[in-house]
Amino acid sequence: MTDSTVLRLGYLIYTYDRVDDARIQMEIVRRLWEPVFGSVYLVHAFNGLKEWYDRPYLEDDLLVQDNPGHFEGAANLIDAGIAQLLTRQIDYIVVSAADTWWIKPAFIADKIRVMRQTGKVFLSTPWGLKDQNNPKEMGLAGDTFVLEAAWQRAYNFFPVQYRDFYDRYIELLRYLGRQNVSYEALLFSKFVNACHREIMPANVGIKQQVQKRMLLLEERIPVHTAVNEEGYWVRRFQWPDIGLLTDHDPEPKQQVLRAQNLEVGPFSRKLIESNDLAYYNGHMQRTVRGPY
Image (cartoon, rainbow, N blue to C red; front, side, top):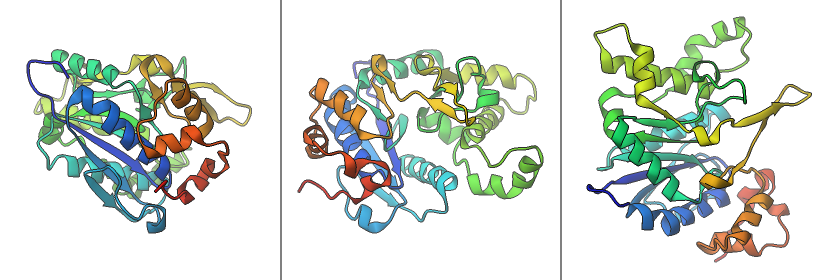
């Protein structure tokens, strides 16, 4: 990364069962990100079964946790991964779910430059729809975001502590018609709390501080494109201009890797060359053994 000071980057990949997605993302970080940022300290947080991922691949640290359930489990992985990265001398943390790949790291490098120049400390996207993108109402994307490490150390945005919040408030939330604790909404709430700690003892100006410190990833808005007949939000999965791929299924990613000749390691080559993607679909991805 060309700048007057060296930027030290930490990168967290978290997953339950998308282990091939995680391995390919590690290859992307090592082959595409490191020429842009220099050495990247890579942490992989995993809470699936041991037989799905029984040895480290390209990560510097592998964190293995029990899985208490989908939402809490993912939240715990992010909390643990960020805590581990903060033991290192790093400046920024990139967090990304295993199936959420950034194949144009120069875009994130540009965003970090903006963050450094403008005093922004957190880059994320409202988890909303085209006409519903207020983070206060929609929450913020937890599948990928960027965080300034020094600000995190000073004001304790993380850990989110999903289970603690769930135990305290789930009855109230269900009384109000919510079925579960939204990680995206909780993420926004925790960010607001950290901003409040930054300006204490003042109890005014919190909204302004949130706006001052957050950089919205405008290029990804909206994350969801419509609401289907069953009432579920329909996600968009690819943003080619910024190099973001979030597909759950392997075929669209395979097409991109083939079109851009992105063979960045053995697992990406395996996906590029595969003529039978059945083993990747859904949770079957966890059963795939390595190419070695």
